[in-house]
Each structure stands twice: as C-alpha cells, then as structure tokens.
Image (tube, rainbow, N blue to C red; front, side, top):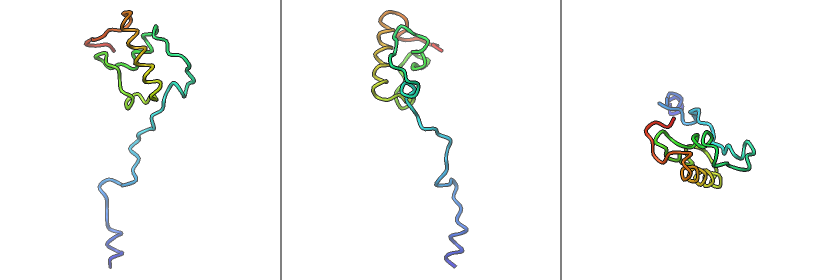
Length: 91
C-alpha cells in the first residue's frame, strides 16, 4: 500500500526541471578578443545599463579578468567624454 501512495505523489514543480537558463559565458574568451578598445563607445554601451552604470559580472557573464578590463575601458571612455557618467536614457 505504501508503494501505491508513492506513485500518486505529484510535485508542483518538477525537481529536475530546466528553466531555460543558459550557462553564461565570457564573450571575450569565446570570440577570441585579445584587446578591448576604450575608444569604441558603441561596444562599451553593451556593458552599461540605461542610467550609465556598469553591469555586474553575474549579468554580463564576463570572466573576472575581462570584467576588470571592461570597467577600466568604460572609466577611460568617460574621462575623455566618449561615454556619459550619468544619463536618463542611454539606450
């Protein structure tokens, strides 16, 4: 009787469900990019949100090494006025 009760157990959410989350990857390593140019604001805006803040690693998927380089490149681009420090609608 205990075995028949186990067969009738239904989970609200399957414990082995795949929610469609893809593993994040470092786009620099995947594409073989060797140098990040701070003079290219169009590429650097991919790493900024609408207010102009730098997106964290957990969102972009960059490795630690490349996230540091992205931060440095964004800060250099801001210094020479290629990117704004603060904005209302960047994208």
